[in-house]
Image (tube, rainbow, N blue to C red):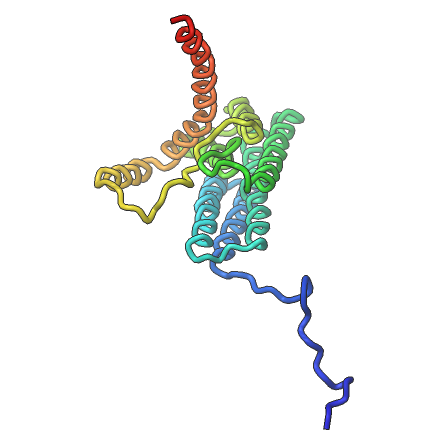
Length: 262
């Protein structure tokens, strides 16, 4: 005997209403990065600026891992990409802006919070542009300073000053310049090397392993100073590359003109 239609179980929904699973592994790293960014905000509100700066660096490491883990395990998804972008806005946009504001910019009045806002909106615009151009952009280069590197620049300054026992009020103008510099550089068109063309599965010369080991030793000797110096160098590298390209373009017509006259 056929079962009445009213008692039959409803068929599973199809199309956009269908349930879709979420990959756990890469999103765990994204959640960890989000937690680290939120933790940095809480610690900055409590005046624990060293812990706040370290938390931002931890968020940067976790953010770098989630994408690589997703690619290696083939668990990439649209949900993961959107979740990662929202996590980045908290960890590398809002958190660094609030940390540097409470550490050094709070006493500057309107100039202070405007500088923090320039950084925050720069991070938002940087992430929005990256999401819309990800399919057409050259994977070897970032357009503008990546938001994790900008956040590391801010966190590195706070960590170094705390390690040197220098209060934020004494370096508020330096903090203002670095904050505005990071915010504007994120929305610039300057090229920054991404490192995405590095294949970790390929064999490398022995000297590369030695250099990596020396790098870890150097960082462990004085983490705040070394990390801050590294990210200052990376933040300036885009301007150096841009200047080199401009000089090459100026030299190329001169070479062509010289060859035509021969």
